[in-house]
Amino acid sequence: MFRAIAKSRYLVPGFLCFALAFVVGPVGVASGVLAGAQGASVAGVLAAVLGVLGLLIIASGLPPSIEVELVDAQIRAIHDEIEQIEGVIGENVKALSSGLGEQMVAVEETARALKSMAISLEAISDRVEALSSSAEESASSILQMTATNHEVAENMGNLGSSVRETASSIEEMTYSIKEVARNVDGLALTAEETSSSMNEMDVSIDQVQSNANETARLSEEVANDAETGAESIHKITDEINRIKSSSLQAVSTISNLGDRIEAIGDILNVIDDVAEQTNLLALNAAIIAAQAGEHGKGFAVVADEIKDLAERAGASTKEIAQLIKTIQEETKNAIEAVERGASTVDRGVTVSAEAEAALKKILESSRQSTAMVRGIARATVEQAKGSKQVTDAIGRIAETVQQIAAATAEQARGSELIMKSADNMRLITQQMERSSQEQAEGGRQMTSAIENISDMVLQLHQSHRKHSESSDQTLAAANRIQELTRDYERRVRTMNQAVERLRQIRFAS
Image 1 (cartoon, rainbow, N blue to C red):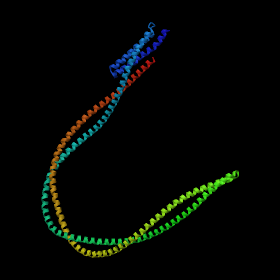
Image 2 (cartoon, rainbow, N blue to C red):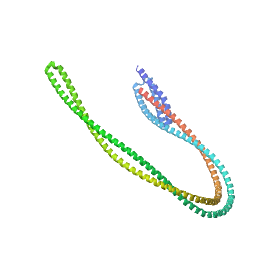
Image 3 (cartoon, helix red, strand yellow):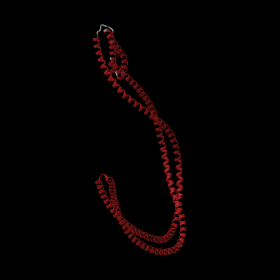
């Protein structure tokens, strides 16, 4: 019976440990690849120990000669060793998992950076190709431009000779035109001075006439405005007088109202006295009704009602008295305000009368000024007619002289402009000759520079192509590293699951 119990007790754990040896073996291989020789040795030891432990436990269940206590001691020793190895493996798995996480993030960031760099390299490649095409086109254009510059330089030499001959002929013609222009300038100056003086006098006469007409118009407007203002002030005075009359009537009405209110106050005093007496009578009636006993109850009720009515009448009388007092105060204030308004109206009447008198004086002065200004305007018109005739005659003379002077001056200016143009043409021709020579030299230098640029662009294109190939290889390597890292991460998760399963089996046993 004991042997059967021992056999059934240790046979199942033995097979479990033997099976775990096959699980931990591959895990040890994976950890050896990822963590190095140390991880492989720990996992290998664990697999060996579990295998031996399984065989011992299985063997302990088969031969009946081995004692149960000895097997228990061996199992506890192996159990402790497994627990230590399990702790070491767990710590290594945690460290390996953390390192793989960081490595995975770094690999992904590197892959993204390489992809971005590959895209940038493709864009740079397109630009380098475009630059190469542009350099070839520029070189062709520069060669054509250099040939054209040589032809322009030859033609500019011939043009310079023709320009110098033309400039000499223009100088002789310009000298003759200037002599004629100086003779006409004296006559034109005298005519201009005389015409200018007459024009200034005409302007002054016209200005005087215009000012006189404007002054007459303004005087008439002032007179009309003064007359209108006097009528308006007269109307305002009438309205102020009517306001004054209305104010006096309002004062009288308010005073009468105050008297009526005082009479109402006297009546309220009488009503108040009657209410007090009624209250006393009701009190006496209540006393008498109380003395009468049962027969006086009805009379007592009537006495109470009378007392209540008397009290309410007294309260209402007091409220009315307070209202009357308020109305009397407001009436007094209204009377004072109306009296102040009447005083202001009196001052307004006085000021209006003074303004009306001043406007009448202004009206009289404006009429006199208008008459005098009209006389000045008529005299100015006559003077302007005579001056106009003189000005017209001088104007015709000056116009003729100006036409002659203008024609001569225009001819002189034209000759000067032609002379300046000839000089400028000569200078420009010389500059163009120098520029064409410099341009030809610059074309040669530019051709050499473009050839150098083309060579540099070609070298850049070749270097960029090699760099692109290296970048593609680097990107492929980064992708391979990323795939391997993910595979290692899956293996670590498998190892972690195996350790967790081992822990569960240990706890279950």
